[in-house]
Length: 331
Ligand code: ADE
Ligand code: ZN
Image (cartoon, rainbow, N blue to C red; front, side, top):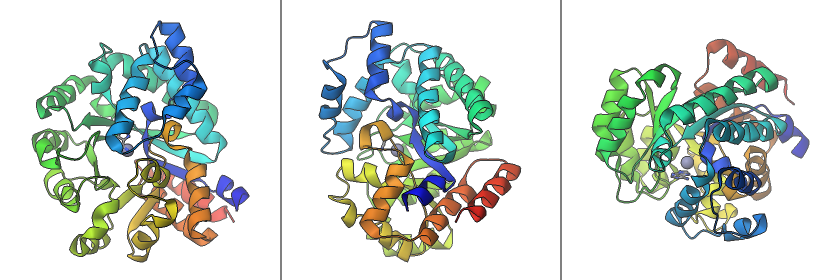
């Protein structure tokens, strides 16, 4: 099965590029940029990754990214991840990035965009890896700040495949961002949002009804609301589920308790993703392997999941057709 899951052409729809920062690169960049870390070693960093919930993770996540200062840093961050993803059979990556978390440290959007754009071009050329870019708004910061970011991103609107909504979910409902998402819609930019990770099913409804999203990041708590499940099924709404993330952030206690089998049994449009691979114990292949171990899924199930992601991805139709063919040929 490992061999099959490695060969399976995997499309990743939910990845925070800042969450792909491995401790080794964190230390190298800290040294290069003269940033003080509160850890003595790579081992100490890894040992600190014992989270009780989303907020306890976010505290370390925002601290960890403080080493990212120059365009070269963002280039290395992304290339480091693209190489690892490519090596485990990932063929397309859609990366969220968090400009506000860099801006508050004095790192401008143009710096982030320069580094990420260079890495995306390099990955395409050298690894044959296609990518898409999702600019995320931090939902625990004011909506006005998100609107300012969207306007400041004008030189890059053409490069954005979507805008997203992430960070601390509880107490920050989608409704807070209606105006920002309406503005993105008028600009013709697609919308996605984290919802139903820690927040209630109503946040999923809010994201659908008020933000006009074309997919829900996580969404696992939809199962608490049967009418919502029926709607998600009828609309073929994509859920970007992140199994290892949900275990590490204690959305579920053990992977064996994860709602994934129920989501599939309900006929929902599920995809598997890694979220923040450097923090949650592995990338796409590890997530696929863990699901095989926990649920005993067969090849057909994994092929369905990989196919769902190919159909849902922000990519041109020629690339989609190519990936469908690769999936077809993988047995
Ligand atoms: N930012 C990075 N990872 C996240 C997650 N799992 N949920 C919300 N915001 C995030
Ligand atoms: Zn996420």
